[in-house]
Length: 352
Image (tube, rainbow, N blue to C red):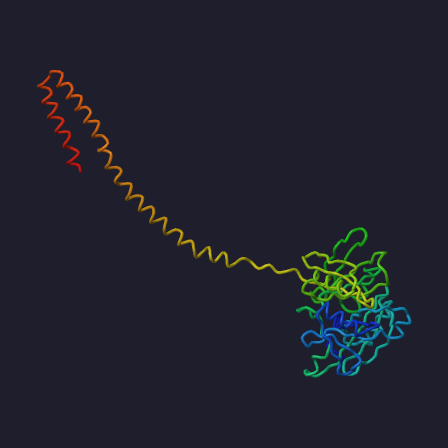
């Protein structure tokens, strides 16, 4: 029995398709995944990111193909006891599509369907030594491009589906969003305070039965859309911005499997350096102002001393008038006026 903390967590994702070689090349271009064969089963291919397995790739089983199941992505949800989970799912109105089965050196799984028809895999990982942990599915990894950021269920009755998964895996209803009359409510769910995805009632024009769709983390959803188009894939929705600033897109690969990508809102850094530069320059701008003020005071002082010089010609003019009066015949007065003129004429020289 596995650790109880794995219950309700998305631990693995698997693409079942009709041409594994073509699918491997497609997602190598779209997501940047590399591939490697499983050490336990060389016929099983794993998608890896920096040497760490993130998803699986296998041929669509003949029995599934005979039932009309198209190429598709399957989500693995963790449980400490897959046998008990399968039995409980059936008691809640779900179906057991494949009875609990062992995967050598990996774990035990069962293919189940919820009451509305959404297919998923319940999985109990095998307890393994630390050295083998790198080959094991890992839960809720979304820290780098190539991991998974979101899990979405398009169904016919999201309220009933949520109740089913709450009972089976302990999920909690978190926030909800109104998508309008055509789509209705988009209900998000989580576990232990972390939001894992959302579910909604699919529109009538949406083809196919209820289904889970995992969203792959890419650096830029808009650029990924262009890549999908160039290599022959098809975009059925997006790219579109979602509340919060993230971007998503949904497409169909070369074999017909629906997939989705998700890029995070770009982080805008604060202009901290500009503030620091302005603070350092402030004292430098103040220094010349003080010096200029002192210079103005020194230059302004001589202007006050020039004032008496301007009044000198006025006094000389009066003296000139006195001279004219002397020439008119008042000689005695003219001599006195002349003395006054000389006395007044010498006064500015003393001030200098």
